[in-house]
Length: 630
Image (tube, rainbow, N blue to C red):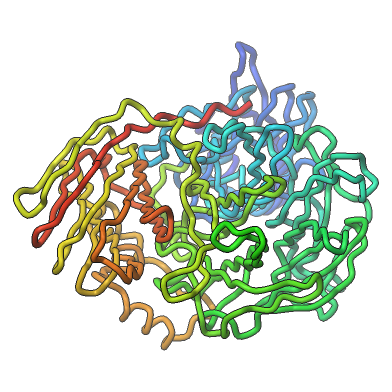
């Protein structure tokens, strides 16, 4: 069969019918390929199989694969096969799949197959044990986080046709406890209006939208390539009457278009504003946040905008969230917090999450601080697109995407999946020693349900000895209280037998806590990043010059200020094969970083340059949290 296909596929293709192999559930399956010129082929599927399995080569250009009227961009294999992805069929014999833009001699042609199932058995050494990941394919921003009827819905930016960015759908997982997640089918698919970009969900308890009481209403950005007479990014809505499993797109979409033709206009966040009994939407508009109001969730009126000049420059605003929190737990003193995800502009390069505290009168946000006052929600390199669940009562629970746009498409992967979410964290507003209002981000209490048998390490003085301990297969939680030495470094090293290590320590002389991943494992891909189009050479140079232990844009240390190192600090470290999350003093410092050791970290070494104390050190192996796709 291979020789016959090669003879037909080389040279000038006019029209030919080819038959490829495929076997599924014991029955012969046929694929007939009709080539119509050099750039268009129709695959006729003579079977009722569920999927056409497409061979992928990640570094190739995108071809188009289409069943119906929505083309999907797929990097079909030309010279080698990295992995395969399932392309859904109708389930009835006679489907015609149109493929455009694939070379005549591409390897994909002779490796198309049909099947009723797709194997999602884990093949990735870096796949986390207890963090949320997609079953396969690419994932980025969390979308539409909402709690309803005992379920937390985690929608996310999803490409089911490859493990790099593209074909944005809303993927979907659900949980009853924020930590054990079940994969569900795609909730909102890319359509003729474009990619389904980020957004939010609310529960319409009053049936304001007229689609049904207590329906989940989703708001998202439709993103399309620029076409004459069409706006690139517009806001749309859809509704679900089956507890978020499926959505019907509103026939009146789009519901908002930018009044000034702005190109970057996306990521709608909708919330109920009780004092004026109305819905409010925030949309990221280039370097601003625009506020809109509505009574019925379909008709929206512009109110105001905020943000021009705030935060580090240059930057691009994305994925807003807006939450009201009590200061120091006092519900008589409430403040609004604007969460702003930016790319570029993060202190350590690339993308990051900042926030601003102030007041909101139902029309306009007024920030308490000057534009150059920047507050970071997380001091690690891999914390972005952070948004919060709606409908959770007094708890404010955020979920970040655990990556950085500098290298998100480059991280080591065999191709089954790429990207994970960081641990859910609960946000609280507190008054710092200098009077500033700051956010803490503590891991949610539900994570304790993942713990295995407690391993006590105990109390010890690091001035007398170094303490080493064996961890369990790279997935663990480590807790301790540490009184840093008066000078030098005091910390813990996570490592493996290969000598790869991540070092976390308090630096007493510089009043900071540091996480150094410069020698953490596979790091070379960090030298391949390309600067963001908004970055200037001077801003990039200033960022690189300010980095600690810089090797490349991945291999370096991140750090956070800790003004008082004269007292003991509570430390929690969550390691999970390809990530380390650090929380100090109940999340008053949070730091999230990816790592890619060639073997899981299974060794701990506590150290100090001078006398220091560690108390109540305990290690918990962490259990798996994902279930198979349904």
